[in-house]
Image (cartoon, rainbow, N blue to C red; front, top):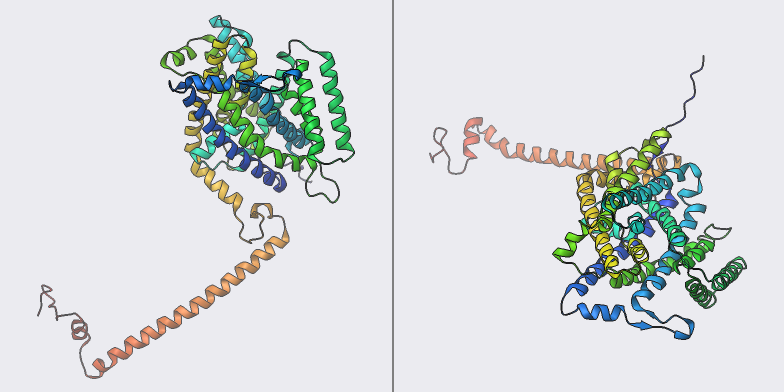
Length: 501
């Protein structure tokens, strides 16, 4: 009778493949630097907007208008930051999403289930929390989408500041969550915040996208071709009534992110490598500089926690995000009979879910769209986003610090490379060549230790022989061993009271 075959239990948040780990590490490195710049920009904006001597200048610069009037693009600095610079951010988001779909974790439906469900729950529950808060409090339901977005750059900046050693699987989970989150945020903006459509302009934008796609298919290269075309597509999208950032996403999704024979990196990866620093280091911080500057006072902060619209945003980010992402992850694991990867606990998933409550860039953008026409409520919604993100960051810091020693051990195990071949040892456990290399290394170390043992033994023998040679004349003279020991004591100390004899 043969034993029944059992399949290995599926792991949640398991180890990444080596190429995926390398890509995630590079992407997160850039996002972390950008996140620190974003954090500095937000602090600068708040300082600029709240110092009495500088408050007027912040408004003056933010409302300064420039651009070609004949093309209908004579916009304010704040408007350019929201519609223009964020198009670069969403262009990178489009490339990230395309790469995840064709080469990353989302290419396999079974692997994509967890981050997609977690991200969807992480958007639905905050929207539900906001809606319930405003239904019971009699507030406006228009801001339901504000707390649904996660800002990966700001979240990584928090990790960099607190110095926690989050394992790569959790970092990748957070990054994938943010990518899916960005996709649905884009859909929300396109569907719920497009009120009037100029079909002629929209048709022109679509025609431009077709030309963009054909040029990519033909393998045409040169920034001087694509940048002017991208600007035309962006301008037509802006005039169509659809939010202009949608153009960035569409162009990002068109780039090829799979490699062909002879290619080390796909065109999408090359372009992303070039544009991501511009997005993370310039576009997003400048957006924060002109959009995060809201007046903060005791009365304003009190209003954030008493007005239903702003309280709904705070609770959505702090409570809704954590409950939604954690609940979606737990339910997925529960119904697929999957288990957490070795070394991780559900407390780690909850900490990352809390960290995802930092919803800065896209939340600020949606806040402007949701409360357009009401400047006071727009500023209060921005203050609520800042407060909610700050509370989520503090709670996540406390939760992550409690497990930081465990994370440090996991990270050290991930980075360990005893055979010095540039590949972490955890990825070579099934490679016979790795074990042969390790056997050779250990044999060399064993031979070295044997040589050192022989050297030390020889030294000990020489010392023993030298000491025996020193004592031999006294023994031949008949000096008792006790007197010999006393003779070695300086001053001839007596035995009774250790005083000089």
